[in-house]
Amino acid sequence: MNSSETSFSTKLSFMIMSVLMITSAGCTDSFLDVTPEDTLAPGNFYQNEEDAVAAAYSVYERLGTPDLYNMDGVMFILANASDQAQPPGVDASRAALNQYEVTALNPITSAWWRASFQIINRANAVTDNVPDIDMDSELRASIVGEARFLRALTYFNLVRMFGKVPIITRETKSFEELNKPRAPVDSVYAQITRDLEQAEQVLPVSYDNANEGRATVGAAKTLLAKVYLTRERWQDAAEKAQEVMNSGTYSLFEDYRHLFLPEFENGREHIFSIQFHAGEQNAGKQGRFWTYTAPSAQNTNGWPVAAGGSSYGISFPETNYYEEYPDDYRKEVNFFSEWTFEKRDTTVTFKPHFFKYYDPGQTNAKRSSVNFPLYRYAEVLLIYAEAVNEANGGPTPQAYKAVNSVRQRARFEKPDSVLPDLSGLTQEQFRQAVARERNWEFAGESKRWFDLKRTGRLMEELRADGKDIQEHHRLFPIPNLDLDLNPDWEQNPGY
Image (cartoon, rainbow, N blue to C red; front, top):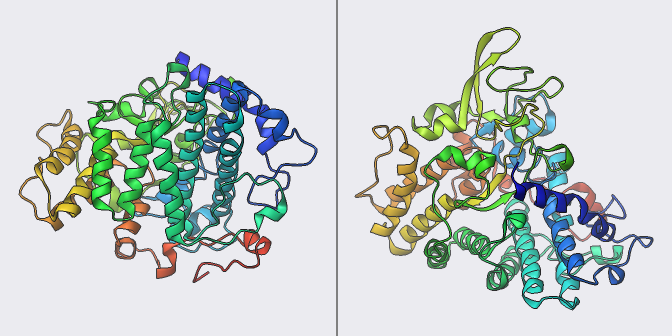
């Protein structure tokens, strides 16, 4: 573990405790954090720079919890709901996501909804209170920018998954404030855009080692480019991606494997990642994706899993996806299908599983320091290529260069393998080529469902994959509990 891991995780473990007294839920019946009357009041907490930093860290802390970007969060809701991954069917709530039998009582989607609004309320606490603190003005503006970025990121996921959602931009302090109407989708995107446009003006280009992993101007611009792409604002998406490309801050790793190794975390290709740390002092901040994607086994040779640290093996690639994946270097990094048992000294061949989140430095599958790369430079290049193709009625030399650089990296030690450089394509051919490249480049990174939805291919592709998906499955159901708390809300159609 490097020094930046230790410093950042230590701050997350200790500095957030006081601010959580302000922003933690006072009642588990609500989807929002509400300040209990007997806890530390915000007026007594937001006094100095240390308080402001702790408040910002409390927002980041929620990202790595099981309900969001760890374990039962993004992996199962999005990867297993696409044509990339599937669960073994041993758990009804997870199988329901894969087979589109989700109801408003599904615990995974309900937990995602609840945790998302808890992040929003923590971000609101920052934007409400930090501007009044007497501290360094540049740092103060940056911290507020971080909160705006994290609020925008969370709303971006919510609006794509649930459609209309309540727009809440002030800290919730009473139960009366919970009864907000579900805002139109256009209004939600307008709020997301405002937050990101303000964030990109004040966020720093980078941080010192002790603060790696926090939102930067590059992260805000990348997310804004993705928002523009989703809204089919092609020229805006291309220009915003170009700003990131021209910044000189980011570039592709030469080796695709380095993207998922702790020693290269927060490197030149990583734009914004969910931070995980496996040490004993980082309880609750340990990545679990390897736990959930490895075969169920203990004490293995080659892929060490300590006794008592068995993996669960409850998310693995769809067979068709694995078989159709091109035989490039990425396939070696993303998947594996052999497991050697230490005590039996035998090698077992089984269904392919995701390998990319394996942490070679750990002997316990329930602990990993592998970050979850939410946005990386390869995505900026592919956003740019797609947006330019749509804005110009066909690919340009610059669009070819962007997507071909990703394909060239994929060849790596197999220069004569598949995936030659693209050239001479029509607009439709290039559109399909970029879609395929995204599907391969981001294997198991939970982008596929969003890509299929925004390009209008969700029904076609998932029905071809054998899923009984209907038109109303373009959205997930609003949790029943929140409908009960907000009688003016209507459930999404079909649920």
